[in-house]
Amino acid sequence: MAEETKKKDRGAWFREMKSELKKVVWPSRKTVAKNTGTVLLCSLLIGACIWIFDFAAQSVVKIILTVFGA
Image 1: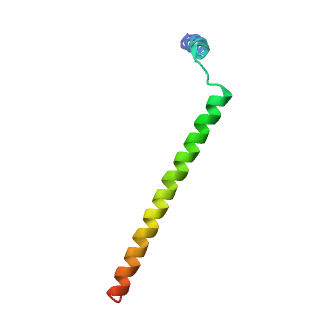
Image 2: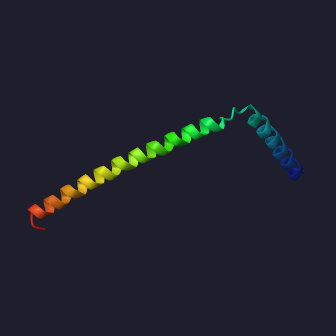
Image 3: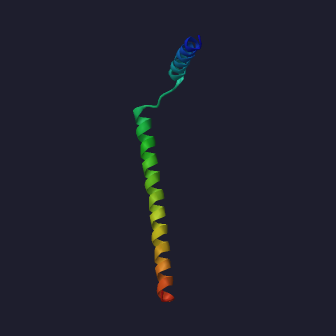
């Protein structure tokens, strides 16, 4: 009895999921490409900022170590 109820619940869940997926407004290829480009550009810019900060911090540490003879 419990097994039969589980199968009915599972079937209802899949039907509801299919119904909900029909309501989704999927983006066009152009929109996906534009958003992907934006994400890549932002990732590159953030990566460059981190790289610059890391290089500057490393240079400062080297200068401090050179001055204090470590």
